[in-house]
Length: 326
Image 1 (tube, rainbow, N blue to C red):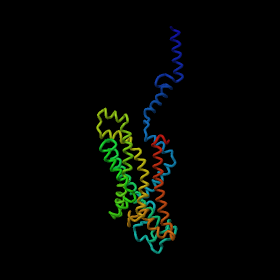
Image 2 (image 1 turned 120 degrees about the vertical axis):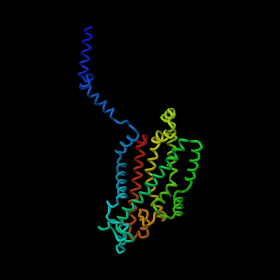
Image 3 (image 1 turned 90 degrees about the vertical axis):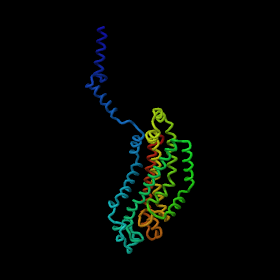
Image 4 (image 1 turned 180 degrees about the horizontal axis):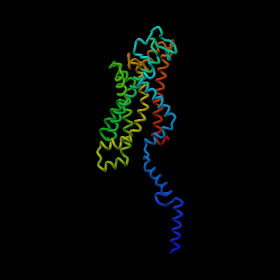
């Protein structure tokens, strides 16, 4: 008996020295408690945290985000980039019309002798505002209708889906031209309305499909069993798990809407003077392109970089939110 107790005591002593036991203040106990505290403090893994960690390591996302940040700052605070006010007629001199690049005029001058660089900087505001506002409107309208249709199903889903198909049958450019030709106001909000009326069905379909998939999951069934209301299930449980594809499409569409505004303004039915946008600048410069290419090339470059940056950002977000593409 004494030999057995002695052997057990020896094994316990060896275990304490090896770090597999001992009091909480010992080496092994403190190491284990620190590790346990780190595990307790660690945040649980989620789709959004994993996606953010993945995005931070993508050069395409970092480059696109930096480029978008520059253009957003240009739109919000143009005086940080130029001291010339293109809305002041005194800054335009007909004697200097269609001059090339110089120290005073980095991008040259246009047909009226206005500084192309200053106009390109100020043109970012209306161009990006149209894209952002249209994206927000389409995401809210299409997302809300898709959420209701996918969750309710039945007659509600059928009715909303048929209305959506009617809008899909309307050619986007032709419909926007018709709406803008009727209103003939040529301001930012008219362009936003014309684009949003024709663009929300895409967001509706994507949201509806995501909601139909999410409402059959176990957590939604459990919420129903616990007596959660329809509104709580929709906005608390289904929407957070169905919003990822909507964010991806909205990010890509933002660049598309910026390009659409430029196309409509180029055709003469979008924005009009005294507003400034990249599409308007391209439209005004096309007649004298061979004499002075700078007034067309630089606004087109800004427009292309903005659209490309938003498309790249959307692609990176899509890859990060889809585990199958990692």
